[in-house]
Image (tube, rainbow, N blue to C red):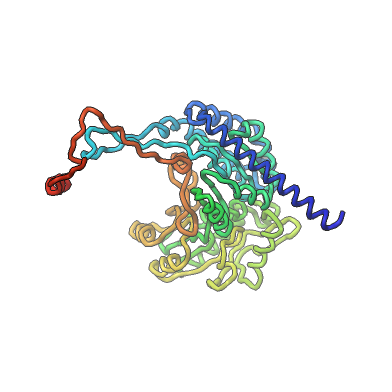
Length: 475
């Protein structure tokens, strides 16, 4: 086939894909217009169907995630399937309460009246998921969107191709596509989706792609929720329980081989305890994954060759204190500690998103806070200290999405805590009731009584201004 014919075939396929996506969006718009999704009992029935489907597909999901990056079943359960099941359980329990109109305090100027906030669905939602937690970070927002009464198009990540295929099959076999649909594909597919007018877009991924999403959404003035990332610090004070800190930092950093948006991205430790903590973390790596982590069944792999090469570059000419071994064939990078790292080093120029932890030191807590504050707002921050005044100082003087005191990553486990970034690390938050809220428009409605209608607000106004001033002061 000639190059001209190949280009023509590609263009034709692209047009076909664009048209089918356009038709799918219209199908969902027509279904949403029926008003069926506004019924809370319908929403609960559909969430229960999703709950049953997840249980049915659990092993297929485990196998798919293992095929994509050798994720251990334990991690696939606690950070993916089990996490989603907890979210579903909470949503089914509290949905009727969330969906009920919320009465608010009345203003005397409107007497007699009652005021309510009604949560209404946006309409047609696009949810674009990432590859690192390909099930959790796609299905958790789906739960919120369904609970709020929306129609949804899901775009799983093509980088986790096996998991994407299982998710698409699960969705196709569970829901009608005019209600919930999954669309697989690469960059072209995402571009076709973004060319459509949605009522809300929810995206999880990199800041760079988040900017592209936001620009595309601006064409239609579509509201967006962006769950991004950044360089999340873990700060360890000299009075911390170092053995506990070492275990919790090692777990949070090397979970999913460091491919976690809220993983500690760099360690900022007081200079008095730096060496001891480095030794303790090195020992924890051995305790968790043995002296040969490449043989451990509990350590995942890098998702693809491009990310493997990007991460391997960070190890060149670096001062490696632990780990540092790589295997391109397996896409394996050992749990690694880097020492004597400055902010000019390539590893400090972007979010690492891999099993490499740079170690920096500070001499005073004020200095550590200034280091964090000089850089973009991270998605997460972790602080280890037994001193409550220091804890409050860090919380008061730093800006970040969410985090933990004396732990890492675990704030995500509580669905009652909103999860989201701030500034460059994200826009909006979700989990639990926040997931319902982020996919709902809050309609403010005043119910005005008809038995009293004071003429004071109507023209002609005459000399009522002084009287109104006195009334406003009294109110």
